[in-house]
Length: 117
Image 1 (cartoon, one colour):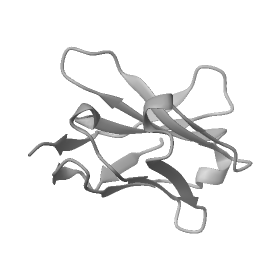
Image 2 (cartoon, helix red, strand yellow):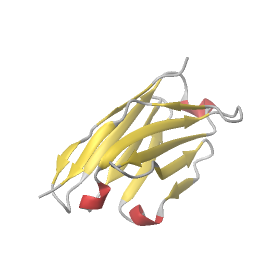
Image 3 (tube, helix red, strand yellow):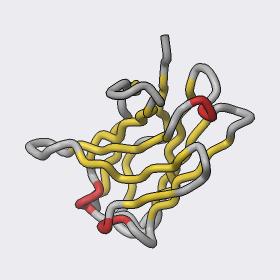
């Protein structure tokens, strides 16, 4: 059983910064990739950022240059540094672990990020 736990969400002013963390049971190095998703009310869940076991990264266009995904293999954690936050970034952010097994993914409970003045 794999468990993920997000932390670091909260309320921030537009233009501010926030750092999310995801703690995983087991080694994150055993997963094909670690991902951050987000979902705003009334909208589909959106892939935000990816970091693979090999260190490659991916970002959705809307967050490029503002968000940075990182990992700490020793602590089995993945982070998401969010800068220059916009109201459109408001969502519940979810940590996801992609297994090498086809179709197998694990999810955290989510953490709320609210960007508002």
